[in-house]
Length: 301
Image (cartoon, rainbow, N blue to C red; front, side):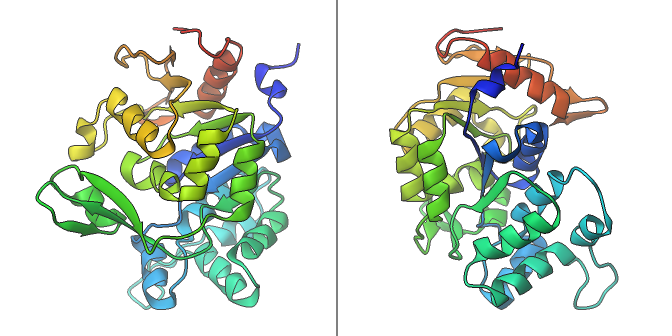
């Protein structure tokens, strides 16, 4: 018997950081039916330094997602993940980020750079930036202060009342098309405010999710995040998503200790052995298969 995910012809996952890469890696057996839409507003680390000097989009999460989908490690894939050490100008930079930036400068669009690397490394899934235009995530603190950048928002001592992108950017057209064609949309896991919500702040992406007839599934983190964002309950997170997209989540995949929800929720032991904060790829795939075998509005434990 074919696994339940086989019935879904167009699966789209949104997010950033290591969470989206983990999910895409779990789903890599889906092949070309899988599309990842990646957050590109990071302003920390190597990506942040390149953005500051080159005025480019954030490449780090895109690189991470591509690398986690490599099925046959090679010299090329190891080079793509090579990080410079030492104290010089290159220290801390990831060679993959530099390769993507160089290809971007040589091509018409950032997406063309991603496609070149994806084909070179034999990655079948589509990897798309949420936008091909540089932008930053901003937040409004409870006292009315504007908080600039993902790293500052994550470190702020209070939850922001509002998030927005500055400058406002348009979505990558292929990302909009992928969402409109999808029959399954996945959001998470990952840093809620700074990895999962930025794509929902791009109007065309939020609208595509709103009008899509795809099943919309949220994958919760295994542990509360550090800082004030950790105060957001699972229900609070679903409310943020509903406000930004204009539609509610259909189903949730969560750890076994997740609280009761009005939304159908599949709870399972999902952690990798020895890493209680990180999803095990096989367990995550099994949870998705189990959930997809259920009717859309049936609660399954």
